[in-house]
Length: 454
View 1 (cartoon, helix red, strand yellow):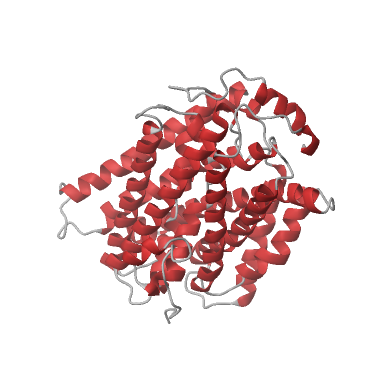
View 2 (tube, helix red, strand yellow):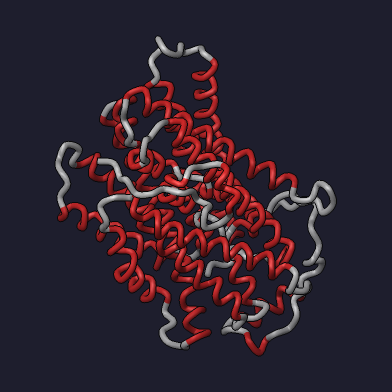
């Protein structure tokens, strides 16, 4: 039975503007879509904007803006392909679309890609917990500063109980709260732009351990406060993968579609479009004001850059707490599609069983915690997953599923929609090969490590 939870939109808690675009009943579902997109790359978005083209006059930020628009539009189009394919055969599970298109191999492929991507997403969220929570505790309590232990505690006490819920729709309320936290993050970034001078002032008395040396490096950089016309270096390879990673919500679209009240393709597409538009706006503003605050001194994790100014700044400490709440509440939402993929692959016709439900959740959290403890930098997670599973979920799988599932009687192979879908899938292959090549070259040369992991 479908969930009858009340559903307003991603943005009721964010802005009354969205009231004009979506009905009150959309709340939980749109929050889940927004949250899945939002936290993926929020801390990295200013950093990657520093790695590509900038024009300080009329053309300032134009290239990044075009790139962001391009990926957002493609993401919305791929959701259109998914929903249309699902509508043709009445299936609302990503793995079953793969099964219908290519049999068991397609089902296993879809489940594998979803699992890889969402494990990467969960790892990125928990990496933020590992990175930020010790700084919050050090500032307030000077209690226990080992991020590896803290991420395990958070996983067991908060994430695991939420991950054991049976339905995804109920997490819309926690999603709404985490979205509010990220809006607070955005407002704080905008506010700090007008309160931090560049070059950064010396405030070593509030520096945390190991911050002083980096702070000196930031002030010693020539022209650090100038917007550069064009920047290309080894870390530019991570730009498009991170942006692609930031807009992947596709594994969650079909489960949310299933729980949507009075579900129709048009209504679900509207939910997805509003979510992507909202997240596009927030990404753009975060990148713009984050970059204009620190220019060339922006780090892979934006909040760490603020620590170089004043590690005990009350507003930034509150922002850290908000981000920690947001990413912690997002992990259970991302875990649902992985568990469904495992169940669909191994036990496709079995009824619900609590032992499997709990066992898969516990096993996934253990695996993700191990990855988080041993991966050196969050950028590596974003880059690798963004170059492999992200193009598969956004471009390749929706395109080839559409080609295989939509019957030729309805749309011939040489019809415009199918040609577009074929080009869409081909674009995904090209994007994957190029991104992986650049990232592997960067790893081999070792230049990316100069950026430092946290």
